[in-house]
Length: 190
Image (cartoon, rainbow, N blue to C red; front, side, top):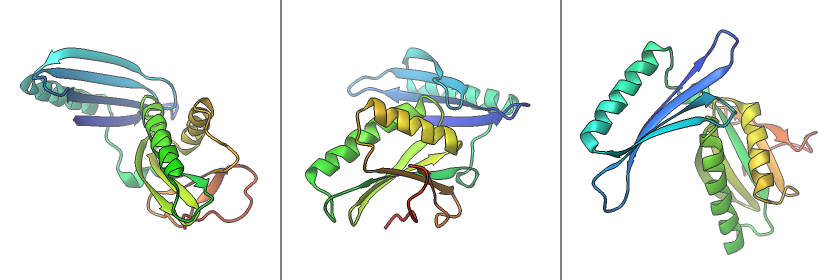
């Protein structure tokens, strides 16, 4: 799946996003071209064109990229974003099968919830001793943290073992706890 994701701050410092992608479905020659756009942190608007072939999709993606540039939208570098880490306390060092299902379910829920609001992408996850870490790269930390809490609450995930922290992309040692507040100590990925 090819994707272009761009952002722009308006004169009031509100961050907007536009993204477009082309995807094909298994055993089908034609796919769909999707444009998604809106204010970061709010549910986006989506337009799609179905029955698009690869050549047409490439032309549409190129035109979309050109229009974004003309309108002042640009891709963000990782350095312009922040890490947001969701951490669950676990009962075992390595995580159980139940913990792996928790990870998979949480990642699936978060991926869609954040993407449709332009709030970032789930980049990775790992098990540390007695911890599950899910890493998200986000352009808007506070809105991302709020969206994470909403998504997990709607999915009926356990909040009693949940910690959320954020750090600038280039300074992963500078994590500051964002949930729960007030912080009950130092946040660590290990």
